[in-house]
Length: 138
Image (tube, rainbow, N blue to C red):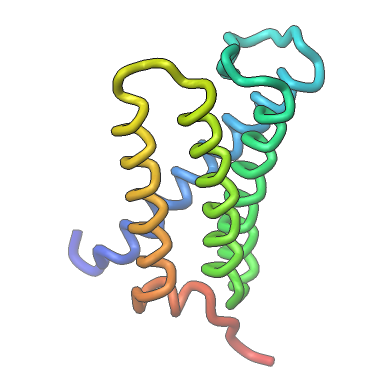
């Protein structure tokens, strides 16, 4: 892998992650809108419809912020993604404290929050991210 930096590998991984999240959230939003869909359900039946709407829209917003920001080299991308992750964290808190029942729910929430912090920190602090979100030219 000569010539490929760790930062570029992380950036590529984040592209795959956010593209996957976007597809998952669009599938969930389609379930929310239409009910019956031709794929296995991705929606948690424990969550009420308003919570699900917030869930899917926050994931779509964060994913699109990252993917569109990267494509346009938009300097505001790290902040936009952080705001999207903040919305996702609020939804996660509501889901975890009000609706989820499994024993690992707190660990899952902690892992989700740790991922938001790690990715957000990388977006704000890494040289690769600064270069990726810096427009060239005028």
